[in-house]
Length: 311
Image (cartoon, rainbow, N blue to C red; front, side, top):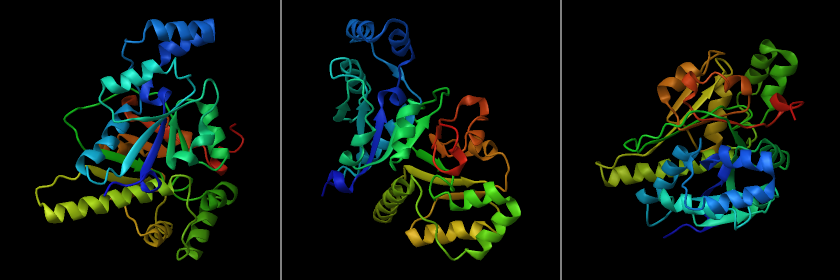
C-alpha cells in the first residue's frame, strides 16, 4: 500500500540546490527582478544544468522505483520564484525525468515556513538566509556548498554520510567540548554513556532512511538477487571513550548505520574520499572546507553552539 505523505520521508529542495542557477541569479543581481523574469521567459526551453544536490536527489527518488507499491519517499520543490518564472525549473525537472510533482512557489519570499505542511525531514538550499531561518525556527535544513558535479548514471547506489553531534544528535556534548575542552568532554560522555542524546536536526531523516534499509533487508530475504541501493555512514570526530554514547543513542532510536567511523579528530576527507557519499552533512564548516578535489557534495547544517555568532 502506498505511503501517505504523513508517513513518507520527504525532502524539500530549492531550485538553487537542484540546478545550476548561477547565470540566472547573476541576471537578477545585475538587472533586477523584471529582467530576471524576461531572462527566464526567453530561456524557457533551455534546460538548466545539474546543481550540487542533483545526484543525491536523483538517487533518492530512485528508492520509489525499488518499492513501487509503497513509494516511501518524495521530493517537493520549494522556490522563491513565481509560478511563471518557475516554469523553466519545472521543465528542467521533466527533462531529467525526476518524479517531482509537488511544488511551492513563493514569489520572492522564503519558503521555509511551509516545511511542516509538507512533512519535510530536510530542506536543502543554496540560499544561506533561508537555511538559517529554517534552523532558527526548529526545522531541519542544510546549506548546499559549491562543489563540482559528479553523476555516474551507472552508479545506482545512494550513499549518505552524516556527522553525529549537531546533526543527528543535539549539541549538548559539543557545548561541553567548546566551553571546557577535550578532557571534560570525554569525562562528560563517560558519565553519560548510558543516557541517549536528544535528537538533532536531521535525526528524523536518519531514522526514516534506516526504515528504508529495513525494507531493503526484507526484500533481500525474499529475493537474494536484490541489490541494495541505500548505504549510510556516520563520520564523527569522536573517539573512545566517547564512542559509547553514540552507540547508546542509536540503539535507543532503534537504528544503525552501515558504516560508523570514530576518527578522533582525524581529517574526515580521508574517509569521505573512500566512501564517496552523494551528500555529506556536518555542522562545522571547518570539516566541510577541505573536500578532496572539491568533488564531494557538502552540506552545512548551521545548528547549535558550533554556529552561534556566525549569523
